[in-house]
Length: 78
Image (cartoon, rainbow, N blue to C red):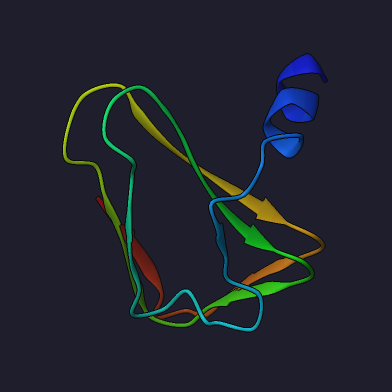
C-alpha cells in the first residue's frame, strides 16, 4: 500500500483525460524520476501505444481514475 500511495500522490506532468492511448508516443523525462500521465476517469487503448525510454533510470506512471479498457488489437511498445 505504501508504493501505491506514493505513486498516486505524484503530481501529473500531463493530463490525458479524453484522449485514446492508441497511437500515442509517451516519453519518459530524462534522468531519474517519474513521468506521470493522468486520466481523471477511464482510459482507452485501441491501438499501439509507444513508451519511449531514452535513457537509464526512467519511469512512466499512469494514474487512471477508474478503468482501463483495451481492444484486442491494442499493444504497448517500448
